[in-house]
Length: 174
Image 1 (cartoon, rainbow, N blue to C red):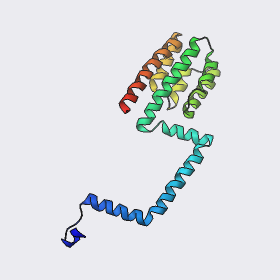
Image 2: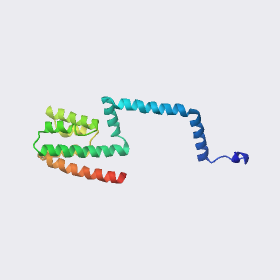
Image 3: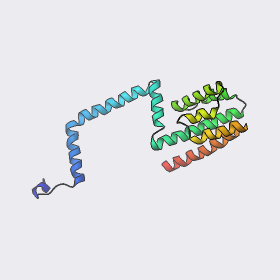
Image 4: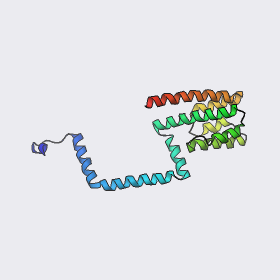
């Protein structure tokens, strides 16, 4: 009112805040209801297996969090799979075990597909590379390990590398 009396306008940022406040006074209840409905719907979809799978796949594509989850998943896969292979567990049994280790269902589905591919005579590296999930270096290093017969040693190196990457990214993020 003071500025209006002087024939002047509010600064643009202040006017935007006043306009936003007015909008919330008029439409706030409807907007709040829509937000609550969206959250409840999202939670119900997340509780279904297909919804959780889709959520996990999308989560891997979120810029900062997705890379962090992909690095963590790659380190976990390499460490667990490498230990099992090094302990004398067969590749199929090791993949079956590692399939249930991670929390991200999209990554677990990639491991399940890799297990099926290995069971039918295919290579492990191609399946790990064919779907966006694990970090790209994992499939390349698995191919090297498969070709050289030192898969457990290669996976140990990959696990150490990505564990260091994960620690660095968490430190950078915090």
